[in-house]
Image (cartoon, rainbow, N blue to C red):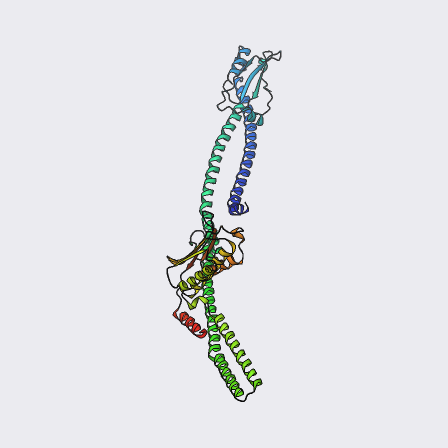
Length: 462
């Protein structure tokens, strides 16, 4: 969940910010529209009263020609029929209003809640008329904001549609721009993940916004330097291993060429002393000479053992195939009830691979016999594409503990494989009858001088 939050937070933060801005804009626009509608309605109503008053006064200017004042008042009221903002009526002497004009039809009827929101309270305005109309009723005007509220509702609907289209198109454009802008970041995240796994080959295309171009350029430079450093480290490691091997070879050569002759000379001198003492019949000297010779024999064995330890690998004396055959014979003699077979289709793939393959096979077979009760162990070493494939399969019933809890043996096998850039897996067989150890090691070309060094070591030991 945390990873998902981190991976998507930038997009959601940007969209959230835009949404907040749009919401704030909508609220501000709604408030301004509301205030504008109130001001407009008030202005229109005041203007309507003023226009209606002038119309009424102009209609009764010719009072000298008025024959029927009551009829004239009724005609004056009728003149306001259809007016959208004014209603005219006659207030009878008894206070009733029997005659009134009809308001013009409302073109856009607003909902009740909107009318209540913009409700405009108006009071009748009684217009003073000439004295000739006294006793026939009073002429009054009253504003009606219904049509004006309907216009405001129409304007708000149009404004809302335009604003909704603007918001939708703005969000769509924003999503499109964010998608294009964040695509390099997604590629960069994937590339960083590959860098974290040790793969320094990913590169980011340097195009787009200047900031992203600089970011991609910096990543590419970093990846190039990491790849160069990795290559240098491998070369240094190989060089260090070569130097270490050469030092061991040199030490073995010195032991063989310098210490062994000296021991031989001491052995000859001790033999000469013993012969002289035997002729002189001096048993004490003979005993000391024999002790010296015995010590010399022990020293020779120790030197031979040291020379054997200084060899780069015990597999180098024989080919990989012969070494595995010897291993099969060794365990076969000690466990005659277990059928061990080996299929190695090549004598050698170089000292490093042979050493790793031999060690993995030896550990896998040992683990199988130690932790299981196999009746059969099959060893296969073959060449597959650009790698050497190894498999050790048994039917010993599987491991006693989960494979993920493997001990130092499994860890050691995996370290030998990964040291050469390969991989190793230990898993249960599909039928749960045993364990399968699989390894894949990239092929390397060993220089010929490594073979010559191995031959020299073997000659020194012999």
